[in-house]
Structures are given as structure tokens and as C-alpha cells.
Image (cartoon, rainbow, N blue to C red):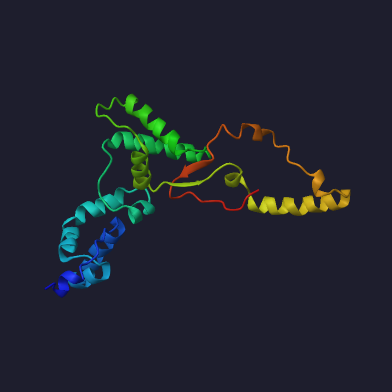
Length: 207
């Protein structure tokens, strides 16, 4: 006969770093282990293991680059080479601070370059799997690029109003309007999307 305990087997739950820190703080405030098990849907051993990792978890949070990194990440595993990881992330931050687009492919190629420059002996393919881990580790996400990033909403709204007035004054029709942007011929030269750090803002209003 199957017991009630086995019939209602608990679903496996993997907590984020942020949730683990929350649990430790609640334990410090006097919350019971049993109540935390019910709230987070985990077993007693999980709560005890989290309590043992207290120092490591707080240290990881203190050294984390972004809030998003600890809110989504679920393990404390670090990069195989801290120097390589740090150099690559700094390169990424510098490029994004200048408004330059950075795609996943560009990151993987740059990672290979730094691998050689730093004379790292261990092999690494820098595949899509590696890229996802790197992005997750630093809270990097994909966002649109090109005109969508550069558009100034207020300037656009002002321009639309002035242009509509100009069309009316000159008696122009929509068929007489076209875009002569000389840079469009190079549209394939740059990535259609870029990677942004957690502090990046997605501009949703197009020009």
C-alpha cells in the first residue's frame, strides 16, 4: 500500500542565490526551519545546507556585479578563470558604455582572443553554453540596437509635430516622403541585437 507521504511527493525546487540569502536573514530574525520549508517548498536538509553556506553566500552577493545576477542565479559556481572572466566583462562594459553594440558572437570571439592573450592552458570551446553561463553570471541580457537605442523620445515627438506642419504648409502627400538615410546601406555590417548589462535600459519607442 502506498503511503500518503509517497503519494504527495514534494516537487524538486532549486532556489536562487537571492532566495537563499532571504532564508538566512529570516533565520536570523527567528523564523523556524519548518516554516521556511513550507514557504519555499524545500526540505529540512536544504534549509540546513543553506545555513552552512552563510559566509559563502554573503561574500558572493558582496562581490556580485549586478542585482539581477543574484536574483536569477542558483549556484555559487564561478568561472574557471577569474582573470579571463574579469577582463572579458570589463571589455564588455567599456564597449556598452560607449554605446557600441556587442553581440553574443562578438563576446565568444573576444573570449577566445583573451584566452590566447592570457596564455590559459586549459581548453575551452566558448560555445553557446559558455555564453549563456557568462551572461547569467553577470546579469547580461539581449536588447535591441541601432536606431531604437539612439532614439530621443522627446525629440522624436517634437519632430513629428513640426514635420506634420511642414507637410500641411507645403501641400505634401505621404507618397512624396521618403527616408534618405545614407547609413542604411551598411545595415548588415552591425549586429541586429546587442547584449546589455543589468543596468542597461531598453528603449521601446522607435524613431
